[in-house]
Length: 423
Image 1: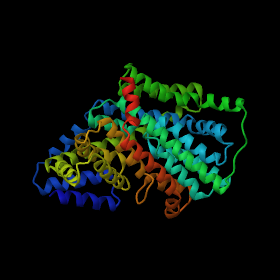
Image 2: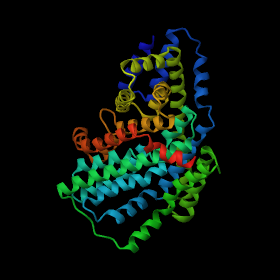
Image 3: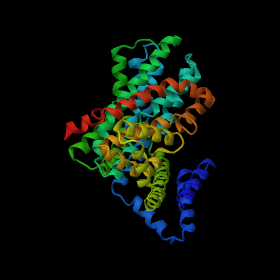
């Protein structure tokens, strides 16, 4: 019956059914086929969302939406363009730099791809950059978001593994910065080879002015991290602090956020939260079925039967996660696979925090790869570039992403240095 569960789930995905409903319908099919009372469905869904930590999700979503409406995108882009726009390929470098700065505001790759892409891709095309290159830079750099804190996928991992979300936030910082720097290097090398344009060098006065324009937006990450790590507030309370902070900055400092816009922003945030919570609930039901069928144990035995060597097991886990990331939404993949794969990781001596960052990084790379890389689809649509051309342009960027992945996989100190330093 487990085979029918997976087959129905895969068929529904490729029919275009949203991932949450694919999980729910395939689980319902399993319950009906096995004459299991249907009252188990609401029970398991409620168990999945009945977590105090998950209450921070609507807070961070609302805070990100408030900051976006408050002019955050333009200010971060302006600062990065003024800072590094004079270098060859400066707009491409500013694109990556904007994603790194923007990451701490939303924590979601799709928001980054849509917001940064809608501004940067037309600007790059206008300045003479190839459309496919512009799309590739934007798509690959948007995946930095859920690595650098705050990060919604990291919150999900912390809930599933019952580990400190503050530790996960810290653990993702260095890998996120490494990924950003790596993508900048690729962007610069390609830009020099193709002789892409460079902008004028800005004065310190102009750079300083644009920095102070973006300062309050960038400080949100600092406020959240310091508050959580110092014990001043929990992650859930941090999300509320972030909302209040975003309101103050948007209404009183930037003054781009209007009172009349707040009801619409709250409605959008409610819709986004509801979709995530629905996904969490159905995924918990799906996960309960997997456990009852002993699928996690079968997968663990299967991987460990191939080899007990730590290096081989880590490579197999990476291959599996990269494959899953190409067609499954990140949070759904985490909810389904993290409880399944965590025992394998701990069996070979990986710290749950290290494995959590590794899994998120794998799934992020999948967001920019065919066949269902949502960031690739969004940026290709903005740039009006066929998926095939964009995929070819992405190859060097995926290459450096995989290099960072291997370093994070086999050098645990990259992820564990900051969490261990704080302890």
